[in-house]
Length: 139
Image (cartoon, rainbow, N blue to C red; front, side, top):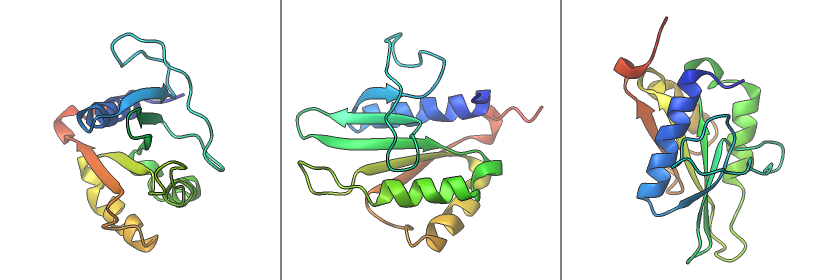
């Protein structure tokens, strides 16, 4: 079951996707964060299911979002997800699908180290956003 922190981060990713022109087409969660609309659960991409998927209907571009807490950044699962998602290219565009990662601000250094370790740092199809520490419930 996703934590409140995880759901908050997914909400930020969804907002970023919409700012970039994507429509949210799939969401793995138990809350209706996106204008009260019913959204399907994302399909698996290789071995894993992303938290949220966006789609640009005009250009057929795909974006996946993945929320990570500090605790799960260096897990085997996270590494597999990043490698799986980063190797997918859109059928109609031939370009890498866009990946937006969401993390608490305190995990930014760890995320940069992980992306560097996986040779994914500074790839133009991967970006990240962070949740300010003031919004993270440490209780």
